[in-house]
Image 1 (tube, rainbow, N blue to C red):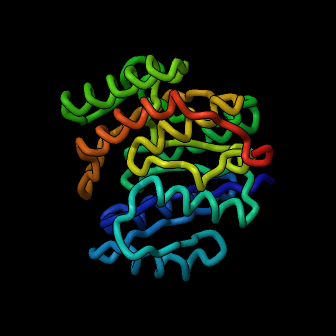
Image 2 (cartoon, rainbow, N blue to C red):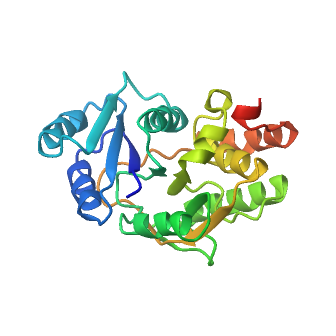
Length: 243
């Protein structure tokens, strides 16, 4: 059986963390979870440590000193996952905006469907977002349109944070050279995988806005993505093992 790990960054997710951990562990396929905990003052880490006593082999946590950015959280998780020999590495939010059941569909797209990267896509079949304010929907949707046109990639949800990577993709990307830290990180990773010749598939999902806790989204996150895209078009991409 392939080894799979779901990376979940957390900051003040005490309302959601136990439920999301238990839900992922209820799925078929023996998923592991790696929590990247950024010093939540609400006690999220303490909840995870308690759960680790129940799931000592499958629940892992890296604690960091503070909010260091979404991109750096995932990069930390990617490096750890590769060092531990996982075959498939997933990204997922802690707040149930991503349905954990869809992890099975993302994995299937890679293991059986031939994809190297599977995206849980909000926009590949119209707009599949529930309970977001219309302004936020439009900001997110047109950000993806802008990226698709600017970078000339046939990806409808370029800022998606619900992903499955084959380990080979992460090994080929020089993670030390990934520059963007917020949601621009999601664009940079997808575009790098595309430029390196990996097959990317979008799996339609329904994104549901969190019911508990507070969103970490800000206009600055989209500003970084907007300006960062211009730099991506100028960059040259090489596989790490050929650099």
